[in-house]
Image (cartoon, rainbow, N blue to C red):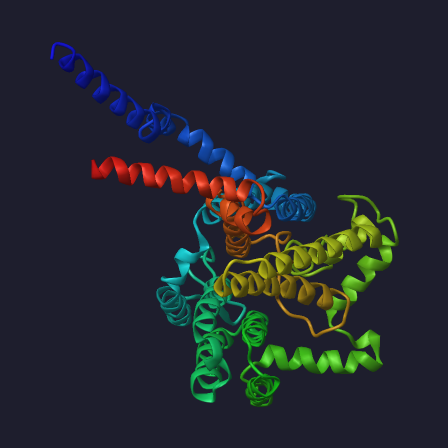
Length: 448
């Protein structure tokens, strides 16, 4: 009887110590409390690690070329106008800084957030396009900008329609081949946005809207017959506008282009001066800043004609490098589209890629006399605040698509699932068995 009080406490202490050792180890508690201290630095490392280095290098090279060429094409104009050679260049550099900040911000935000705001974004774009027709600045017979030329809603419409189309088309699924749910709403939406841009008038921007939307419609699963009907309708409306002289400047440019096919000397003045610039440049160019066509010969050498200045000062080799950079952008963009985690991200990445590359191809085609002259700038290189900021915003969305894919590939949860299927004999089963044992231990603790 005297020994019984001693045995009971010793038995209870042994059981309780065993439970505490298995069920509630003190190490996870200390890790949870210390995690917030390192969280900001950890988030920064994760953000940098998930950025796509190839896309950043490509865009960085294009921006660097843009800085060089904008300075080369504006230093004389800036000196004559402001008494300082770098005033216009610094304005372009400021726009680039703003664009890079917007790009990084959109890259940090999960792109799937914008799916919920796609309708609101489209309504804002349509409202701006209507506002520019009513209150826009009248320049050379066109109304394309607001607030003294600092805001061009047409540029925002190009990106806005890409985001909306990605959200809408990804929600249709099999209904996209339906005339009621697919072709008719698609034609109405694109027709409204593109039609408002045509009324400015701005044929090149409207063409980018039609082209990028059509490619996204096809990639989402539309049939070739639907594309043929939509393309024929858009082409017929455009032809009617040209014949009716509603787009007078475009009609004259098309007529001049058709005549120049048989007689190159009758080509448009801008095209003739661009050809002279390429001939002067040769293979290696005359040197950065030494071009002559930018001094009063080439119209808008810092925007529309900047590729001709590249050909004159950097030669065929320099122009080819620029073209290859856009090719690399296209390859990387479509790779990110193919590897996206969902349909919305895939269509968004493809739409942004098609939009950027199409703008580049249009500008290059105009300077090489392959299509009639238009007012399309060269992406990431030409001077222009709205265009540069919107293009970098689209690049930020593209980076965000890649970041979401990279985060899912690096998350511990995904690694455990992959291990359970790919390496079931090794770490996968060990991890799952440890997880199940810890869960059973926690359940036992809560029951006690």
